[in-house]
Length: 366
Image (cartoon, rainbow, N blue to C red; front, side):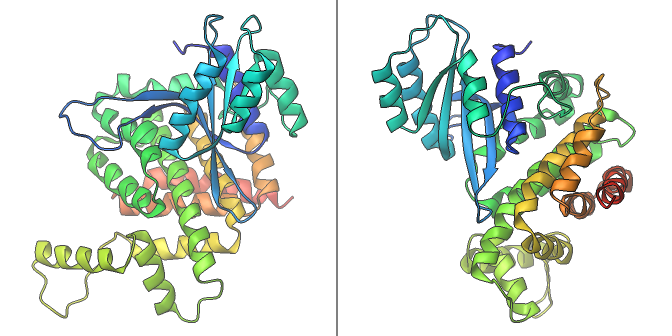
């Protein structure tokens, strides 16, 4: 059972209404793991990703507390530390109506980029920034849908390690290229466990497409700033690979390790990243409309959650995303096909999402 359910529901709806991609119950890991056991630092109730005018990603954090005994300014200091760990731009501490919050505490929290809000104030604040906390057709904004999704590892323990990465490790990585690489390797690690005929596994794959699009969209925006107009295909390929691996030195090291592992002779061309040409195509496409990358990620998650058969339809919301961000279905199609091939999964995984994307492309054209 999800704690502080009503507050988290409002935070999720506010995020969706603003076009921010929400992630519920993010586990915060240490900066460096020294112990063999897994020791978490804390958790984030709701983490949301927004795109700036230049398609750079910003993170907002929500701390939801229903106890009147909580100290608002104390939570603000705590949240400021969490923001530093995960790269948060602004934080919101949501408290019950009876919790005492004085103006001096509010202004001190604001100086730390944290807002102290009572439950009712979250709604009025949301309205003032062009959002709302009202119920809508989005599954990303549904606590019930999140609860069903987060329960998957309990039903299928074989995918638990991947699920932990998706709700924790992915969000701890600051480099978009590393997130792309890790997502592919993590999916590959569980490919034998995934069955496209199981709704939960389809949802898991769709959420992977969502997170992968978050990372690729961020990487593509960086490539766009470096190469606003690539001179040649070779220049584009070399730049993408260098950003993907965090620099040319890392690319050279990866090539050497790959050559040794594969026993390939000197001079023979080798690939260090699976389906690299398809990945480059995805990056090139996202560079055409980088601001559609985050809506595409939300669309992928909407499709993923819809496979869990929650008693509500998200079709209308999916269509609204496709119409507002017309490239988003295309990005879902390309990303799902790339991940399916790169992770060596059955073709049924990508076909489920490409079919949905094609349907939305036709709907969005009307």
